[in-house]
Every structure is written in C-alpha cells, then in structure tokens.
Image 1 (cartoon, helix red, strand yellow):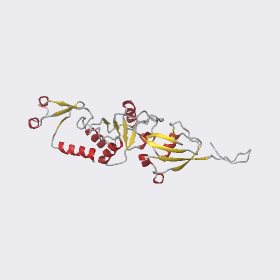
Image 2 (cartoon, rainbow, N blue to C red):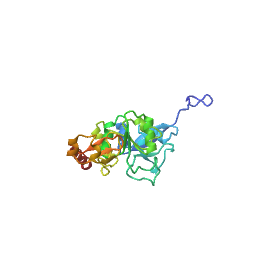
Image 3 (spheres, helix red, strand yellow):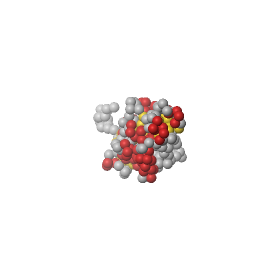
Image 4 (spheres, rainbow, N blue to C red):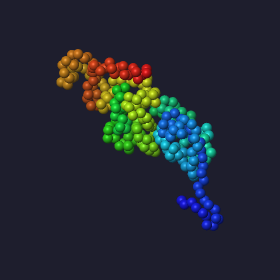
Length: 262
C-alpha cells in the first residue's frame, strides 16, 4: 500500500499511529530491551495487528506466554489491537492451573517431560540423572523437536528463541544461562521440580528406564571383582548400559541434596 497525496481531495494520507501500553512479567522481561524491562511502556503500531504477532514483534516468543490481559480481561491470540489498551502479559504457569481465564495453550502439563535442543546435551544428561523423561539427540532439526513436543506433550528446552516463535509451539522455555550447572538449577526452579526427583531411575546415556538385574545375569558382562564387591545392579531397558553404586555414588547424592535444599 502506498501513502501520499490524494489527487482528488488534495489531502495527505498517512497511516494512523496507534498506541498501547504493555507490561511483561517475570522471566518474559529477559527478552526485552532494558528500557522496557519490569515496567509499563508504550508501543506504537499501525492498523489493527493481532496481539500474538505484536508480542513477537516486541521480541517475546509466544511459546513462553500463558496469559494476556487487555484492560483487565483475558483474551486469546485472536484479539486485534485497537489502540489505547493496557496490556499485561504473563509467562507459562506450568505448576498452576489458570483454567478460569482464557487459555492460550492447552492446560498445564501435569507431568514434566522434556525434549531438549541440540546445544543443551549436558543439561539433558543431568535431567535424566534426576529421573526426568528427557529426549535429546545432537542432530535434532527444529521441526522434529516441535513435532515431538506436540505428539508426546513434552516441554521444549532451548537456547533458540526462533523455535519458540513457531506458531505450532505450545509448551516451551528459553534457557537463559550458558553454564550447564546453572541451566539445571534454572529449569528446576522454573518448573518447581525440587520434589519430583527420581534419581537413578533413568539412563543418562539414552533416557531409557532402569530395572534391577541380578548378579548372575551379569557374569559375562562385568569383571568378577565388581560383581563380588557390589551387590545391586541396574540395567537400562533401552541401550543395555549397566549401573551400580560405584565410588562416585556419594558425590551424586550430595549433588542431589544441594539441588533440593540449596
């Protein structure tokens, strides 16, 4: 569309600039410029854009948004901005059911299951050690991750905002930290996982479930000294890896205790 002087009326036509006041809450502020963080700000626009596209144009992936209030009333992504609104945008409430208001996604997932992006392999391994069902492959494509998330009701964990801006995404979280240890603490705090640990129940290698196996079945696999010294063994139902309480077991228990109790 071109804007300019109307030859018949002699009037200049230009798009009408409208304004709305936005306020983003909690970790959604991580996606905003500092001048907009943790406070209300005025956003200018033309026409009547959809609120979903506007939120993403501001820089916030819709995959992290769970509730939008316009002038105090909850709205869905079909809402079109008119100008003059006061808009509050809230992050996902994975541990809180907000069903009385308009849901932007399916209801919160009651079981925290994850699919992890390709650059977060160490995080995936640590989540598995704590017993969380966590899919990871270092050659996942974005569309594969999204498809798995939708089909298996898994939360996407990623350092790529682009994935969370895909229209199909319903449950996702952008990892803020770069250090794997801090990433794990971040995920635990964000999804309130402290009381959901089931350590040593999943294979850190492939995510398969572990089952107890007798010494007799391992005579052709493990050294005799190991079989004589240790009395409890577990085998991965997926890749077949064998686990036992080796010298590192105490360190892992201390690590888990710190994660749960700070």
